[in-house]
Length: 379
Ligand SMILES: Cc1ncc(COP(=O)(O)O)c(C=O)c1O
Image 1 (cartoon, rainbow, N blue to C red):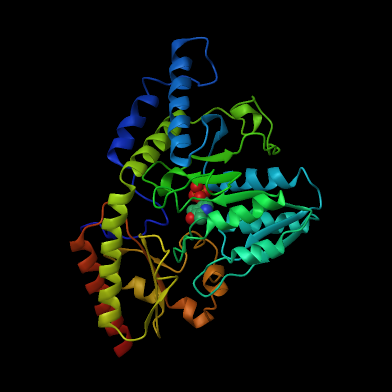
Image 2 (image 1 turned 60 degrees about the vertical axis):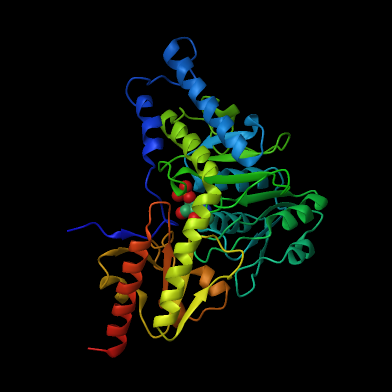
């Protein structure tokens, strides 16, 4: 049987062959510990890590000394938020209602432990209003966390405007850029970002590796103690092949961002057009502008998305939110933009990627349309 058409690139992406090639030597022939520079193995590994740090810094408009490697965006978010909050016990925190669970749950835990939390609502397209951020800021606000792009509905947040407001207040601005990096330009200076999380597996890099950007002179606490790697902020032996993969993936994503973005947007628009033209009762979730090219989230009235997916074994896509599909909770993002429980159950999320072709998009549209028609006709 042919493998399904993969349309779930918000969940994860395949490793690019060029990324894999760059990683391979660091598993077997070049297996040094990057912290041990007494011999060539360690020195080579260390040089490879520093090269990846430069690649990331270039992608973000940062200095290489501001990049810290982690195991992925979940860990980066935890270090950024807990690490910043712990320096100001009981202070005030701000976030938005549509953040990834790794931000929302970290914030809620801090709230249970005595910090004050403001969770900002979003409008029906998922936008955070910079003026609401401004109004939420207090003299004791220690950190504000707003994602750059949403993983379910693709909304690209007005990060530069939010950053300017946060900068004036003196609080730290954290951005979860996991879905945005490689898809939209990020510049930590122009956007007044102090802390930024990213993950390799969303940009055709390997799973289990990511990074945290920490602006120079910003002080945050480490969450674990160890051998002092990553200047003590994230100790533990470095994942050299993963870090090389992350650096390469980042560089490649940046080189092809505009070209890939245009091509992927055209595929997404074609899919959207086919679904909207062929079926009644289909609505797009998220904005029509300022949405990442990869994203198409649709509500298909009267259709249970899980049942729909069961009948579509040739397509790999998600109902609602793939990232939280281990938790049987309705999507908090769709709730935050005003969807009803029945509406949430009827949401399909497509995530289009670098490898998808027009032929695959036509096939996917055809399969979904036929299956919805069959389900609506009833048994
Ligand atoms: C917006 C966002 N933040 C954080 C994460 C977590 O990333 P990771 O899988 O690297 O821990 C994800 C992906 O699941 C995400 O989409």
